[in-house]
Image 1 (cartoon, rainbow, N blue to C red):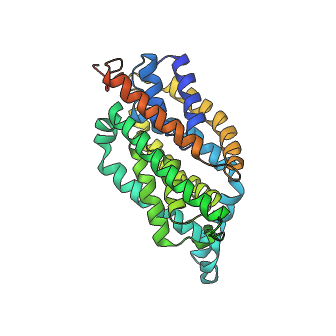
Image 2: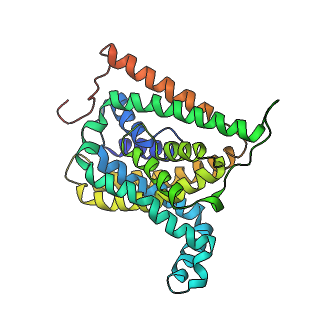
Length: 290
């Protein structure tokens, strides 16, 4: 991998990680369209450490408060009813599904799941799900001629059941094209949470999963066409760009709909199917031996 490739891929990672459009799919597609070799699941996992570092800094006050309350709750029973202490446990509970599926499906994640036909399918399907969830949220928030405005849930309403459902939604992002934020936000909206609450828990929930995945894949660097230098460079680029994107996105979702992302996902999926159907693009483009 060249330094130019790592810069572009780091830029793509930073731009797409927090948007509900799938960063792993966009890294895969960028390489395929440019005629580069697939950066692979290891590069994707490690470069996501950069964007997750942006989450740690952006939500540092929330994270510090949660960690402090959770730690104290281990020895102080009075703290166990504190919302922040409970959030600490809920992040742990919600991280279990992706940990289990990530280890169980490792071979599929690094192989069959990177087929461009599967990515096109997941882009479209999750796009439709996100669109439905967004419409339901908008209906609750605005009411209508014959409907009253419906109060949606916040993170103070989050419990173990919903935390596990969020976690199961997040685990779907192991398939490129699904999108970690897209799946968890969609799940949250369908369960009745506000856009801001679903997005905030989605980002907090991603922290242990992404850091653990990146650390696990560190041993893979240098064993393929991806070396340490370009990987670290891409991770730094992803961090810088990712921080700007997350700040914009958190403001965007308080007043705007997710429908632009829905239309983009569906359009990109259809374009992919058209290119593959006309043999303009191989479903295995960029893979080793293609």
